[in-house]
Amino acid sequence: MRTRAARGDQPPPEDELGVTTPMSSSWWSQFVTDEDFVKIEHSGKLVLLMDILRQCELIGDKVLVFSQSLVSLNLIEAFLAAEDQQNEQNRQTASLASDVRISCFTH
Image (cartoon, helix red, strand yellow):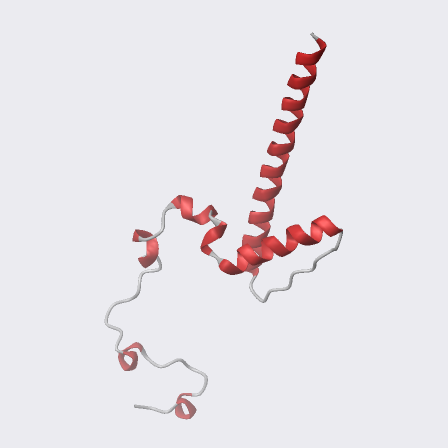
């Protein structure tokens, strides 16, 4: 076996790692459904972040989120967009319900 210093910055060859077949990038597909991709409950960190963001919104604070991962930031953006869409639908439903109640009282 060669040492890391002898290899330089190169990763060890697959035969040294005992890898016999290439690993599929979709090995997890048997455990994950399409619906799971939009469930924030699967990530404790995202649940906590969304809770912090909601609390900050209530008190008027601004938040800046840093990450070294663009994939993580894209995921956060997608969840924020989904939450914003859900909030908009809730506002429209509440407004419609209010209009119906007012209509019932005026007739």
